[in-house]
Image 1: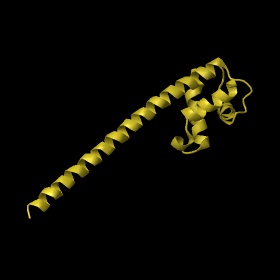
Image 2 (image 1 turned 30 degrees about the horizontal axis):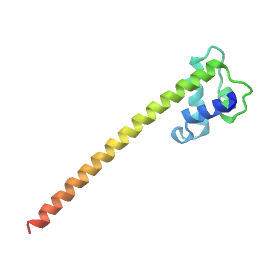
Image 3 (image 1 turned 180 degrees about the horizontal axis):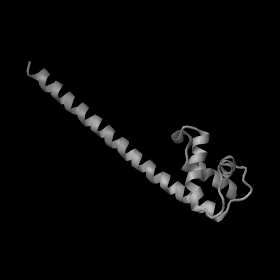
Image 4 (image 1 turned 90 degrees about the vertical axis):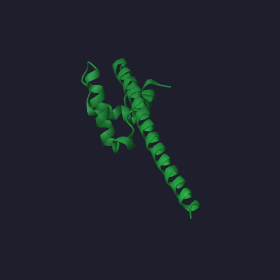
Length: 109
């Protein structure tokens, strides 16, 4: 796998279009994340070139920043999934409690 393809994949995984509301927002989020982590000037245009697979090369600093972004996104996704599972568990518990109450009420008639 080439460096440019790998960077494109990492950027798309770390900054999912669906989560950010579209292509432009995801590319801008990537720019904001990567820019302070590299020494050279990193522009939104450079972020878009990586996203689109048009970059001719990927610097090691950029690759390291993308790896950090990918790790952070995986941690955030884990937190979101755990919160979603906790909410679903609460709904199931509440439903079970209502159903148990209905069963007791029906049995006392």
